[in-house]
Image (cartoon, rainbow, N blue to C red; front, side, top):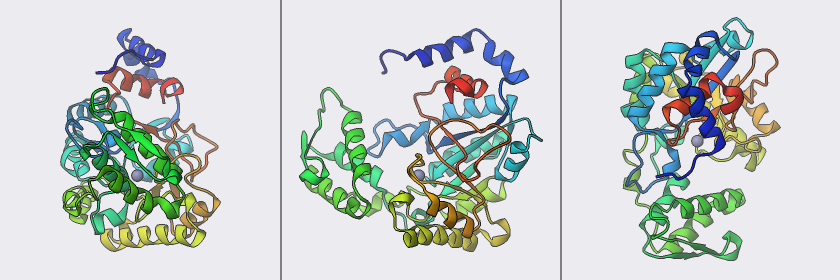
Length: 341
Ligand SMILES: [Zn+2]
């Protein structure tokens, strides 16, 4: 239960309750492309993995899709150019990052039934050889441990508290440790996860936990054949800008070649999304690699929407949808992205 609402949340609800959202969604208060990004669909209650990855329950997602389908033109990457040139006045694009299995089991039926396309950005390595990613594994360790503090080496931040009484879901503890992970240099990232496993006394998350975590290539092909779009999200999900140039190239090249091998070059996608996706998650080297391997469009992940006209094809903005976003707030985000996206 969340206590207290921010001014933004209050305002977005007031706009919705006043009927302004419904009214203005007809006339359109903005022009361009609004991209909404999701990770997982379902309920995080009782789950040991990273709760921040659940973007909406199936019920909430279904209501969001119905709202969008009734008011907006929904597009895939094949129509980005038409929107940015101003030919299509206003469009919304739905995207999913990583390739979690619930994209297929929970999101896809809702999208297919509504006749709405979405774009799924896949980290090809997770599909090829399923493993538990670092963010889920760290959360699993913190939620499985019986310890109330994690004693890590100084280079990894020292002591982290876990308070099962004040924070029964470990929301604060998981967030703090994940934030710390992101500040560790790339070559020490593996050692960090190992150190958390040791400090928690849980050991590493069993590999079997990944067996049904990701989609299979057959599922991805079925979605593609039903009108969904598939894009790249690297091979092993590193923060690209933290890698040496040749490693960046390898990640993007491998992602491209696995997509082509599994989906066929004629269906080759030209869209990509950056892991993590903040302004420092990619750089000039990344852009050159994308160019080289045929990714024309690339999406970041730090909010905003794209106005028509001048744009950076390798930094198209996306807005996060999180499970706390209720329907009035969601409607406000789509009607007034100027304020809420
Ligand atoms: Zn990702």
